[in-house]
Image 1 (cartoon, rainbow, N blue to C red):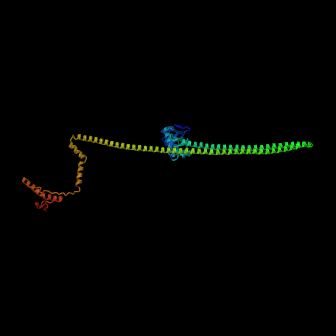
Image 2: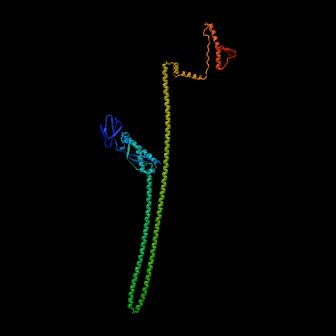
Length: 482
């Protein structure tokens, strides 16, 4: 049968004529061969890896990995076809395999880094996780097409990133307050400075205007007096003929001159007086400006010092809280470790006791079984011997080699004694066959037996016969002393 795979599939053929497996896109499937189809489409795996940093701070690393077979390498494709293709890509088995590799490598890498290094070097951390996971997936013929590691998340009960964000937020807020205070101080000081300059310039312009106006008024009065004087002079010239008119004219002339001088003096004094008043107003405004400036400077400095002290106190409190939380976490971990060690010791002792009990139980059961078997054997044997206990005992002694053992023990007992064995005979096999002859023969035999018997006793025990027995002669004719 001719089989053709789709664009995202491969055929795996094995059987007759194929030593291992053959991976093709299309081909003939002969009798005695089997064919399977596996899909090459990558699959998305979503995980939330729980890891712990070098400071033993837990965190959650959400990640989405797009993983599929490596199609650009024949060796990887063969590995995938042998190891993974029999399972569904979305099966629990494949997901657990991928998840185990990702979680294992992530935990090992996170345990060698501090939380600050992980948080500030997130990009490098993700890249290193990607490389280590890919290295493990190569042995299964898998390739990571895309890896999206999301932002690190706190584990419930351990709000490290939350506290870190609050710290950054508070630092930014405090810096913003300081910048606002400085801007407000510059604005208020600048406004006061501009107001003072405006008042100074206005006062200067007003004073100059008053002076010019007074000068113009004096010049006008002078011109008016001059015109009037000329008119009067002309009239006086016209009326010179009249003496009274001349005298009156002279008086009026003196009076006008006096009034003009008084007006000039009054104008000069008025100008000086107004100038003094304006100068005093200017000095007062300058004093107010300097006072407001000093107030703004000291108030801004006091506000900044207050905010600084508050931030230092908050930081000290935060540092003490984190130190206390770290000590508490360490104590909890030590207590948990001690609990686990105690439970492990208790479990080991329990298992040892159970093993000893089971061994004793099995030994007792073996003894009971052996006793039952021996009882059955002995009962059957006794029944076969017709209940004869003596025959049963002799058979058991012979069967168990008891007689041989006794002979061996006796032989071992006398091995070191080196005994001396004496053999003698009573002599005279023939003789009288009558009763009297037999009696004398027995007496003679006893008499002949004495010398060798006494010699044997002497050799084996070292004891001599008593002196009253005199000299005895053995069969060889030698005399035996006492």
